Amino acid sequence: MMFWGELVVACLLLASGGLVLLAALGLWRLPDFFARMHAPALASTLAAWLVTLASIVYFSLHKGEWSLHVWLIIIVLSISAPVTTMVLARTGLFRGRQTHRALPPPLAQTPDDQT
Amino acid sequence: MSPILSLAISGTLVLYALSMVLGLMRLMRGPSAQDRVLALDFLYVVGMLLMLVLAIRFDSSMYFEGALLMVLFGFVGSVAMAKFLLRGEAIE
Image 1 (cartoon, helix red, strand yellow):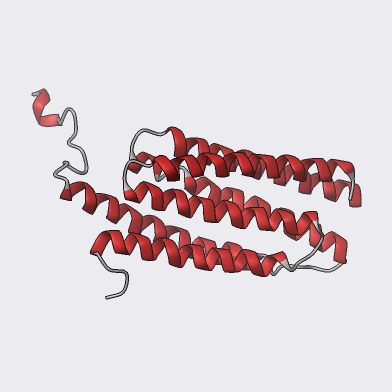
Image 2 (tube, one colour; image 1 turned 60 degrees about the vertical axis):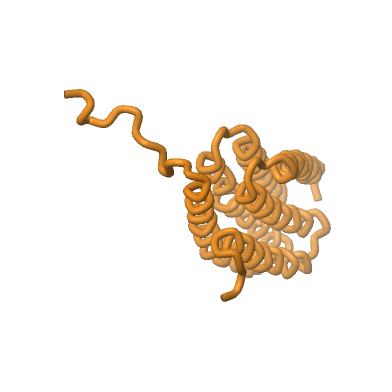
């Protein structure tokens, strides 16, 4: 029982590590600010969920009772992450337009051009 | 703690450290200021996940409060910096 529980915890932790590394690669490699904004969402949603589940499983198995207080982190993060993303996106739009870039970028081919 | 879990925790910490290095590179390099704010927010989230993993590693639930504080202060800091870039002042 304990061994299988620890195996589950190990798998969850490794999966979250891989997801966070993927998010960091996206943050480093993607070409544009608005493209880069997508990547850290992986870390603050799915990776955080996996670590929280791992923590709940581990402490519940070790203490022999439900230990669900880590759930608070998920609740706070699911409220705060979208707010941060929206404010940052507005910042990107505002500062991009201040430097006279057309944001959002014009479509390369609008349907009117095709006629 | 079984050796499998201990090895997995070490691997996860290594992966987090690599991600933090990548985020730090984006923080140093980021062509615009909002890129740096984004990278700092990412670093806060990864640091919070790191503390949760350390809680499992040292079998202590004391790390939980630290992680919660990091979430809250990371949120406040990121929003304040983004608001400063947006309006020129954080609190109006």
